[in-house]
Length: 111
Length: 114
Picture 1: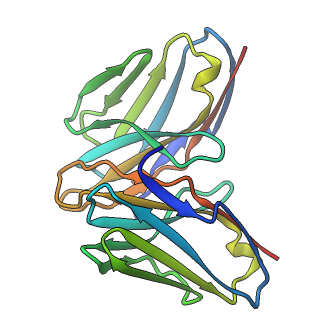
Picture 2: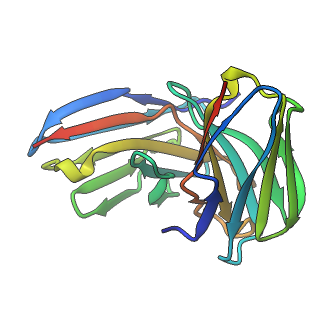
C-alpha cells in the first residue's frame, strides 16, 4: 500500500517566519502535486512536479521533488495569514491518473 | 470556483435514510472521482469513473453506491449509513488521458450520520 507521510502534522507560526513542509514515501512517483485546502472548500492545486530534483517557485512558495522521486518539500518564505490552510501532497505512479494523498499539514499563520 | 459543483453542501441523515450526493462538472473532463475526507485521516479515494465506466472501487462498503450517467455528472447514493461514515465527501474531475493531469475538486458535502 502506497503511503505518503507529511510532516509536521500541525504548524502554528507568526507572520513573517519561514517554514518547510515535508512529504515522504517509500514509493516512486511519476509526478507529485501539492494542494491547499481552506476551511469549507475542496483542495486547490498549487503545483505539479515531475522530474527528480525539480524545483518550482510560486511567489513565496518553493517546491522541490526529490532526486529519487519519492519525496517532496514545500518551503514558504515570510508566511502570511493568507497562507493558513491544509497543505496536501498527492502522488501518482507511472501509467495511472489516480493520485494518492498524503496525511496533510495544517498550517496556521498568526498576524 | 473550480467548475465542479457539489450538492448539497451539508447533509444530516439518520441511519435508516436513503439520500444521494450530486456532483456536476462542465469542464470537459472524462474522469470523475469520489473522495472521503475524515478528521485525522488522509483523503481516501473511494471510486473512479473514466468515460462513465467505473475503474476503481477501493473496497468501499456497499452502503455507498456510485452512479455516473454521463461524463458530466456523478452521484453517490447512500443508504443505511453508520455514524463513522460522517465525513466530508469530495468530488473531483480531471482529464484522464493527460499526463500529470490536475484534479479539480468541488467544495464537498459535509455529511453527518445520526
